[in-house]
Amino acid sequence: MNKSAYDIDIFFKDYVARNSEFSIDRVEALKNKLKNKKIATILDLACGTGLFLNEMAKNFDLEYGEGLDLSVNMIKYAQNHYQSQKLNFVKGDMTDFLLEKKFDLITCNYDAINHLILFEDWQKMFGKAFEHLNFGGYFIFDFNTLLKLKNFNRDSYYECEDYNCVWHNTNKNDKFNFNFSYYIKQKNGYYKLIKSSQIESTFSHKLIYKALKLSGFKRIYFCDKNFKKYNPNKVFRCFVVCKK
Image (cartoon, rainbow, N blue to C red):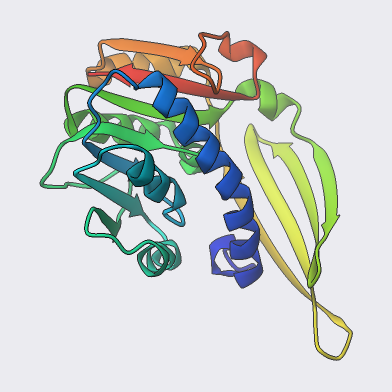
């Protein structure tokens, strides 16, 4: 059986590098979007390595921030790398959690929501986000769109100092299938092959909008990464801003 990507040290190295650029970009965009809003508390769902939450703490006057992730490895990484009295990282399922706090801002970044294969789990997550928001608070997330799904079949290859990676991505049964092979250089000069795979789902923006409305959100709009309103049918990655 293939190992989960998050259990592979090499994948962690890759993930941190890719997530770094995305996280810093998101914080800058949020600074512009929310510059006139008081954001004292934040919950980051599927927080990964914790980098995004740490950047938010540096750029906003936070009282506290909470990171939630299902992966034990991710939570351990976050706890070890971002130790702060303002930040707390806990293991938890973003579709089923109960925290004794409410937040001004709840985020779910880097198309993490696409890892929820069933739409009923998207609905559960929306309900939990609404439940944990302060009145007037924002829930902001992004997702890979149906347009990306239709254009998903592709292969890629890249080389690093101590490993090479081959990605083979396919669209099968309306699912994103990420299949990747790491060729890790050994001390004897040979390479060790480690394979892993992930599956993601996506759904129409109309279905997502309806589910958010049913969860209780009053204001919902779809936008690009800079929060400019955009047609979800024309982008590979769509951002969603919801207000309670």
